[in-house]
Length: 123
Length: 291
Image (cartoon, each protein chain N blue to C red):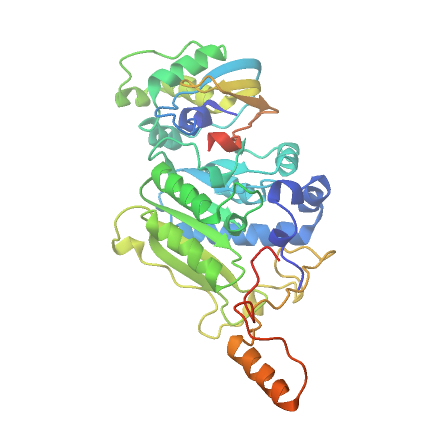
C-alpha cells in the first residue's frame, strides 16, 4: 500500500466520527521505482491532507518532506516534486498494521494489502 | 445458460484459489474483462486533458480491469472481498493499490477525493444475503452512500452489472438514486442476449447537462458481432459452468380451496348419506405457521 492510498483511507467502524488518519505500524517497507508524472502530482496535491502525509512518511522512514507552509507554488520546484512523488507513490507498506485513531482497532496489512473487513458488530 | 455465481456461494468463498486461477489462465475471461473495463472507462468520460486521475476499482478481483486503467495512465485503488483473487493480483504485479474490503460495509475513503469509479460485474453481489446479518437494502445503501461521499463533485461512477431480474435492477438503481446520484442505465447491444451488457452510469452531484446518460452501443440494429471478432457466440459473458444448479422452487402460491368449499363438500356427502364429522370452529381452519 502506498501513502497515496493511506492518505485517502479512513476507518468506517460504527460510531467512529473521525477515522482519519489511520496510524501506521510498519514492519516491512519496500520501495518500487515508478515514472514521475507531474500532471498527476499537481492534480492530486490539493486533495492530500499534508500533515498526516508527512507523519506517515516519517513512520515509513522518509523525513525529507517540508512540514509546514506547503504552498501550491512549491509544485513548480522540481526538487519538491521528486520528493513528493517518492513519498506518495514509491514507498510501499508491505507488512504491518493500520490503527484506527479512535478505537485502536488494528487493520493488519499483509503482502501490501490492508485487511479492512469489519466484524459484524462493527458495521 | 450457466448458473449465476451469486447463487452458488458468497463471493469470498466462491472466488477461491481455483476460481481465481481461471482469471489468469483463461484468455477469454481476460479478453472480456478488458473489453468491459475499456467501455466503462469510456463511459466515465474523464476530461480529455491527459492528466492521470485517481480512480477506484470496486470488486477489482485479480486486477484485470485495473490493468486497463493503468494502461491509460491513471492511478487506481482496487478493493475486493476475495483474498484469493487479490493474491493473484499481487502475483500479476498490478500497479494500483489493493484493499481487502467489503463494499457492503461502506467504502472507507475521505470525502471528495476520488475522481471516478468503475466496477465490473460486482454490484449485483450486494443483492444477495449471504449471512444472517446481511440485508441487501442496507448494504446497497451503505455502498452507494459511501461511494457518493468519496467521489468529487461532478465525478462519475460506471458500474457494469448483471442484474438477475427487473426487481434487482430497480433495487440497485433505486439505492443509487436515494444516495443522491443522478444518471441511469446504459444497455449495450440490448437486442442480443449474449453480448447485452448493462452499465449504471452515475454522476455525483446535482443533475446538470453533463449528467446526461451516454448512448448505448448496438441500439440501432448495429450488428453485435461486429466487434466480437472471435465469433465465439457461446460464452460471451464471464460466467462459470454449472456444477450444482439451483433446485426447482416448490410451488408456494397454490391457492387453497377455503372454508366455503369444504362446507359445501361436507354438505354434499351428508346428502348422500355418508357419515361426516359435524361442522365446528375447527373445520377448515388454517394451520398455524409452525406446521
